[in-house]
Image (tube, rainbow, N blue to C red; front, top):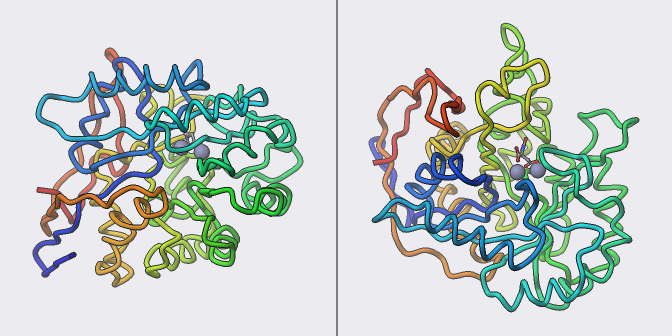
Length: 349
Ligand SMILES: NC(=O)N[C@@H](CC(=O)O)C(=O)O
Ligand SMILES: [Zn+2]
Ligand SMILES: [Zn+2]
């Protein structure tokens, strides 16, 4: 049960249903930020090379477990990276492993490390049939890659061209529309059957596309799907705070070294894991909906994935504190967290 006063907020320990942990030294650097706040996370498979098989997922899971500092409790929920060649047998192996909880669709070329992604959903028919039959969720980066479609329209066009036909063809397939950024996606998910849900990031609840250009270009506010107009942000806040069980927390925290963001061709992705739950608390408080945070952050995702709700609790204090300018990352590189050098008004204890 959520309890809150003007001074503190206690809720069931949340889960992050969309997270990039990377690998190697980067994994070691970012994992404690997530493990401190979250009981579990759905770990994205877009490594180089991508996590395309059960065997690779088991090995990656072990590297995550090994990177976890002693005394921290955290369960990585693994995913497979769907390709044109993923077989029904691979889906059966994934299901039987007990550690894989979804298969991720990256349209080829849509986002970071998506070069091996799907070129046409028709090529994935046998994998999708197996997923539908075995109850393995499809997690979607739902943007078209067609060069003639404006970058701000890529999510909306994906719904018409791919999402609606997909759901028609595989009516029992569990689908998570990841990191929704538009009113169109929120409306679509609301009107879809109960096997279709969505994750929402903190940054898309807190920012609109003006935040990419405030006082000059802001590379740390560039991510995919790209920030949209204010009317879309408002629709996302409405969906997240509605108490509708189809919408749940997925940070899409996506760490990239500072020099790869502050570059002539900057990488897409925001690092939000460092202050994730505080950022969501800020967004829910601004909407006057702190009482709806626990369902969104701690219950609905677990329910959708058929996992038990977590039992532990976390507490946030109403306290102003300054986010560091940067954090250690891979080797000598540093990471710039969202809100670097600025104040937050909630602090997890
Ligand atoms: N969100 C992002 O902008 N980037 C993600 C990939 C993704 O989730 O699309 C990444 O892995 O860096
Ligand atoms: Zn994505
Ligand atoms: Zn992502």
